[in-house]
Length: 244
Ligand SMILES: [Zn+2]
Image 1 (cartoon, rainbow, N blue to C red):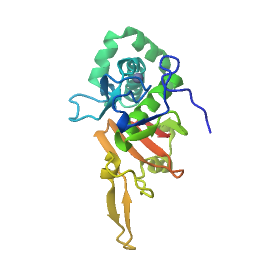
Image 2: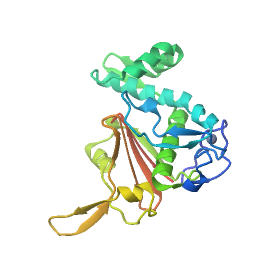
Image 3: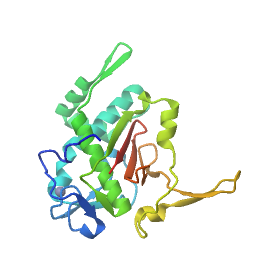
């Protein structure tokens, strides 16, 4: 099993390892008293107009603000990179923000380079990892009412263009439900039923949640080790799987 740095790195050392909906007065990321609600996903990953009723989760002020630096970097990186490959794709809000933030623009220009017909890219993996885990904790807490925030067992992410058709299909697959989530949790209410017309077998499964079509979707489920798992697609460009 791979070991991961605690969420927030040196800036916010977690004080606890689990969060439950009963702990709504406490920050899901660090365990401090929560004065605010954090959007999951943060609006920086979406485009305007924003969808109604975005999920929110309890967070302390330092965490709520503390992630925004890395979130801007990750969201801008994904948008700029995707734009380089697909000229039709753009995010007006991020373009505007980059005009104001010259430092970030310079960083992205140095990390995503086109030379003749080739794109050369590098990115700050710690910052990506920090934000991917943060997003997954938020989704897991919101959907399951309980999450072991200190126990990341799987962290995988890759650019869609690196994956073959089978890998993309497997990422998109809707898992059937073998263990029931807690009654009353949001994920419990999201379970859908299916009937196989060929063998008349019925099944229950969990479906993708489209926060914003083509921009952000996630899926929560239990993996084969019965760990809470979250799949996230950002801009249909970066695919992530995280298990707790
Ligand atoms: Zn916090």
